[in-house]
Length: 106
Image (cartoon, rainbow, N blue to C red):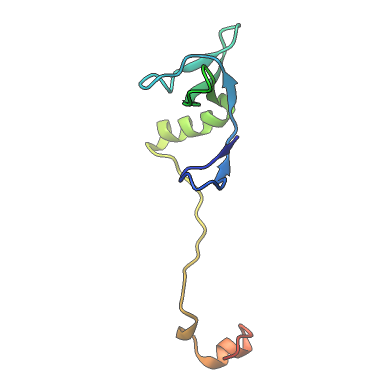
């Protein structure tokens, strides 16, 4: 499902969800979504809140939620990978380095 977090009409990312008709109201999101065998299959998380749509909710699949729950239990936070880069002003490098190594000219 495409997600537009800042409401600019552009998709920010896709999220994996299970569509459900379970009632999701303010204060009860985060509840269990279980199948007819009593197995936990998702965590209720959001609904479409428009006058033209009634009873359409979405749950985070349990396979997506489990790694996050494990991180929270083990570390007290979700640990995300980081990319070790820094932004530098190209003018900080000597002109010879910019031209020879970076292939940048004035």
